[in-house]
Image (cartoon, rainbow, N blue to C red):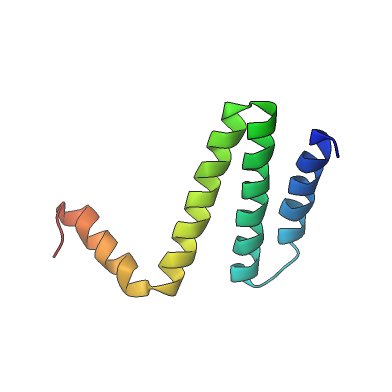
Length: 86
């Protein structure tokens, strides 16, 4: 398998994610695609591809946790507003 196929696989997973109406499924597929992109970036030595997809993965995981634990979101907002935990 050539490295290009890894990029195409990541593209296919990313594009497919938009066909799922359930946000949790979309997010999981986006994390999977970002992980494939990270491997692809490592294989071709492209630091921007790796960095961008680490950010995407982190944002998707944060979004998932925020939706799963709404109290965590409020506590985080309080810390940001006051500068310290309540």
